[in-house]
Image (cartoon, rainbow, N blue to C red):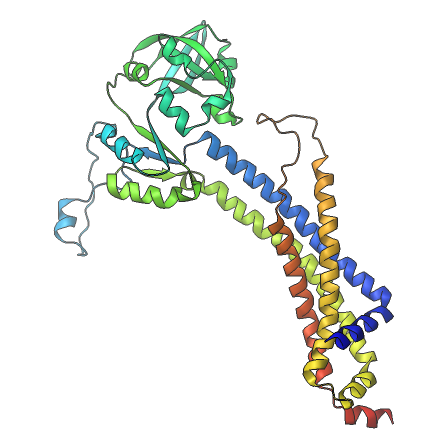
Length: 414
């Protein structure tokens, strides 16, 4: 094997310029793969982390995923029965036996749950009216299922209990109303209830849709405001392992019957966009490596053509077809390995260069730079793809070299 590697190195060294061009092509492909993957995965990871930080991992709602089946359908399952014109029944909204369901959820390992009552309200301050979504919460429980505590920019979540009819507003919502901490606003619900509410704090999540239209108050206060005593219409769940969200949501829905949505289901559109982004990214970087693979194919084919007599001599000295194949395959793999190593170093430099770029304008989430992922798996994937492409590119000329008949070659030369 050592002899084969020495021969392969010598053949590549004699065509130094072509070898360097092929190595540079592979290196650029690997470097762009690493830089673009780090950029895309960084953005996607940041976006998902923002969703996970702001929204619950699982939401149980006071809804049904599908309308209940009618008696005719139940009596003839699988039969040619069609029921139409069924009008929805006027059911009292709210999660039934919410306390029992909360107790069962909190008994599960790695699960934290909190009850909520969400409802619309018109907030009035002076002559300005702004529509908002108010979430009635229990502060201690809500702190376990959301990061609202760390999103507070003024006041504390616990201040809701210390203030009569206290409310915490999103920073954008407070700006639209023109209020500050300590001001009193009038809240008018669709039920016609009017409550004076004192602003005890402000929060900023970085998501404009929430910061401009959402507020928190005590669960009991919101129940009074919405005229829905003792009603809970959502249960928010946070998991220690976020990857369990979708299967656990299906289990909870099958057990309770209430519509249960995981964060993946609620953000399915965004996650689909990420799949398309990844497909585009891998297609572009794969095309660069494919072009580099053609360069490797060209150099190995040229060496085979120029070394025809040498191959014949090697086979006459006892080298087998397998040895000849390995000789030229080793040349392709050597170019791939050198290009991968150089590409990893160049990719790391590109990532550090991108990390120094500043946009000059800070985003609402506090970011003014590229979000980059420095993951060894990206380097491993890029290197593996490059070496595999180099090996495949070298296989065809290597097999052609192994099939050469030394007798015919010598006779032709003579």
